[in-house]
Length: 507
Image (cartoon, rainbow, N blue to C red; front, side, top):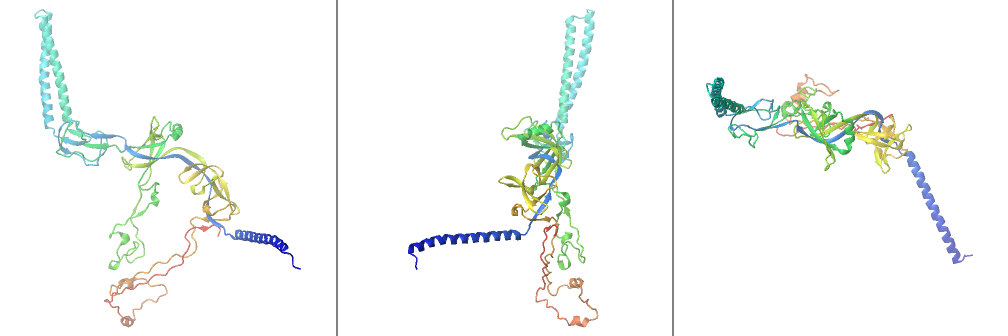
């Protein structure tokens, strides 16, 4: 019996949702099983790790500074005349009192002699006036001369004495001008460029200086720190003597270790590292002709190393425009590595924090919930742990809370990690197995050239040595046509490609 149409529609509307629900349930179950299977089959993630440790970390303030001279002297002439001699070289180090310029002395020598002669004449007149005054004073007591005559002689004597004093001052002025014809260095330091040459006329106290001298040993570095650091500066710098390090800005922000700063220096054709072999061919890699031993190349050492000084000045006010405090540090500068006007990176050390918990800067990751690190557990899984960062010191981060000394933390590879993920800690510096890439073979020589290099080449292992008893065979070999101009050469084989990075620990 065929059910009515309304019954068939009701059955169809009831069966369709059941079928769809069953299909969705089966799909979800299949997906969950697949994810569990993938999770079970996911290989460990290779990461780099290290241990949190305790260390003594200095508290430093970094700033940009500029080198200024301790003293600067603008040398000018105090007398007028023509410069006859320049007694130093531009850029020369001079000592205090050293002669620098010589001005024509003839007019000043004549003025000095004239003043000296006037002094001698007036001294004689003053002596005579003094004796006359004494005689008239004695005669006035005996009433042989009047009182007015005695007073007149006393006035003449006093006038002669005053004239004598004026002559003495005039002679001192003439001597001063004569001495100033030799211009001397007022301070010790390094001279700049000459601004006035020989034969030029200079004027007393003229607007154009002759040369500028800067004292560069010792020398000062001027820099500014934020005013927020002023309380710490007042606390630890009250007694002075805080260490300051200044690094010249020569293209690198960090000081280079001299042991690791070897620079290969190429001199040219005479460079031992590029010595020409037979027929002008380079022997390669600095090896001398006919030997396999490499020859050492000249080396240069980087000079980007910090200079050590001490804090010598704290300004008495905060710059309201920039919100900074001006500081100055003094440096001995015995090798003159700090130059006037040079920009330097200054680092002020306030104190040393003892037994601080430090980790590499790459270990701390910043997320939406703050800073955190990945901890490697004993079961080779990682856990995410939030930390509180106190401050950063160079390539290290000081942790205030969240870690303890000895915790193993991930330093590289955090982007591939999830909580409870399996990891494999890589050992830095371990080389993987496998051969390196083979080199290229040498290019053959043009036919007809000197074959002595080929004869001198060592035979390959296992190859038969050439026999001196078979000249016929050698004579029967075909000769290469020198006019063909062909080149012969071969390429060396390629070795297996290996891994040269890091290797997992325990593998």
